[in-house]
Length: 346
Image 1 (cartoon, rainbow, N blue to C red):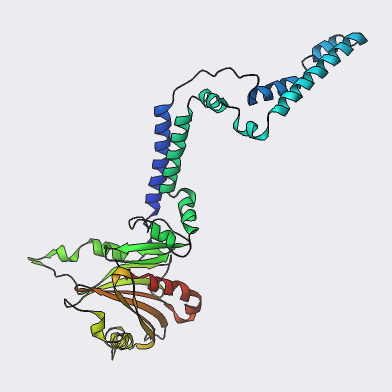
Image 2: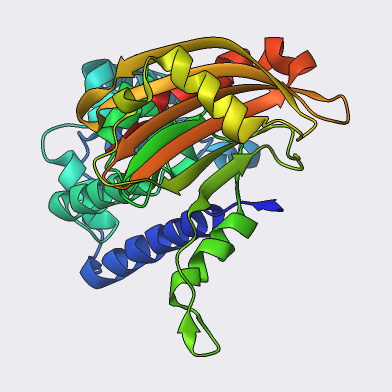
């Protein structure tokens, strides 16, 4: 089926909501103030006086009377020198921190000129930061979570959000509240599988009888954009007898070979399967997981390299399979193995 993104519209909605919330908050608390006078000793006062002192205010007078007396010019020069000295002294009193943050009370006056207050300013900015982090604005949330080692950034996210916040190029999918695994950020969910599951075959009525739930069905599938069946990852659910456990299948290698012979490449199917590796692992509260690696040769001659992780709970067997063409396995091995290693029941 065609792969389509599912989280872009949600991110856009969160971004629009961010802008609307900020506008509404600002409009609600905005109260106009008359700008107070600027004290002479303040940062703005010093700068304004400095700019005024550099303006040629006596230019017209100089043009009108170019032949003024020497004594008058000398007196004016002495006055200008004194004024410049006072301005320089005032400027020297404004250190770096005072220039940046202002003198005590100056920040409140600046905010009052903008029609707000310190409390309102901090409230708006705090709300904006919270909404921006919640919406992953410009990827800031993903970047901050990516500063943590390994997959700890994904572990900090609630299960409902781990699929929308990629961390270090990976996101986590949780299906049906039963299993989870990590998938590359750029891979898209197969909408054909999603729509088929949403149709609810167990609830359809055909004639006068309800159709029974299928014994085997694909729960979810992901793949690269414009990809095909040769490279993807999927989770398949199978109904099994109650009380079934993986250990009842025997050792991982025995169970894997039985799976290949009975389901993957049975006799007469035209397929050939070669088992490469089989291991077992305890993965948290999800319990035991069998992991197999094998190569399947199709009737057309195409060779697919597969890695499969299997877990069981109740009357359901969950199996994740990630695959790629054999000739591309060297480049994609690390990513496909990470998907399989991250699979577990929750």
